[in-house]
Image (cartoon, rainbow, N blue to C red; front, side):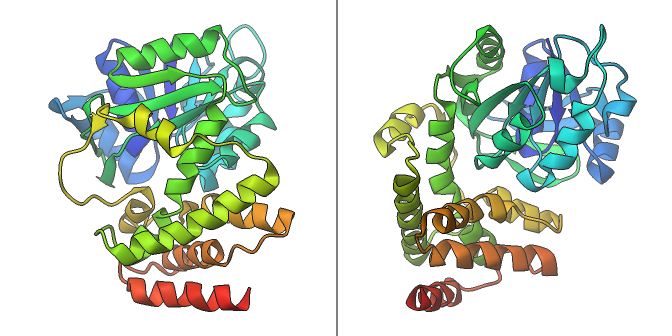
Length: 333
């Protein structure tokens, strides 16, 4: 199988680079200065094993690649706010032998949150969810680091609509062979909903910085409490903390040090957008559908979007000010 990494950033480039190291055929999809750097200098990937350069095919869209192959796998790793454009562009691409990618190819959603699978299922016949625990850093064009050890990351994979099939098992075997702790599971979305709880803190980190602080942890606890309430109202199952701990324990340990997460990195790169609408905003949506107030997540979503829209420096808000906004919103709820 050939893997086409749609969005060769922190996650897409790490998975793509590791697959290439294991002998897989990989195409990177990128744009702008990042695409230019990948073409000129290769993918500079640093893992716990050291740094290396991968010179892989790089395209900006399907028109540059030509007809797709029947055994191609599309791995979607753009941020969710960019998913519709990517899904529409690649879904209409023609496949050798007839039909389109949306009709014939496997699409693996490797984003935070749970919305991309729903967007993809509107367009693609064969959609898989990938729950990604893979701390990685992407701050400059062409360079990505992911320092987990002994595995680069932990991946749970399954059909987005539930269940497992032969294609999922084959993709899972390729990922395992590329240095990832990989679990092919019947209920991948249960793992993605569990990861969403932790990702509610991405907005806290993006606005107030990645440095640990008890006040940041306390605000995250409040956001998670709202999320668990709306999950219960909606009847949404999620993996327990004990399950998550067992899945992660000793599998992809990180070296000491403070690292900014994906939302902080988006602000740092000046992308102009952030995925808070599909993290904290998912909780706000469920709250409105089920009549449950979610003031903390509402504030976090708005604050992160203001930072992205106005180009504010990541981490330039105090946790005291952010907590005060959440307190005011909660008092009004």
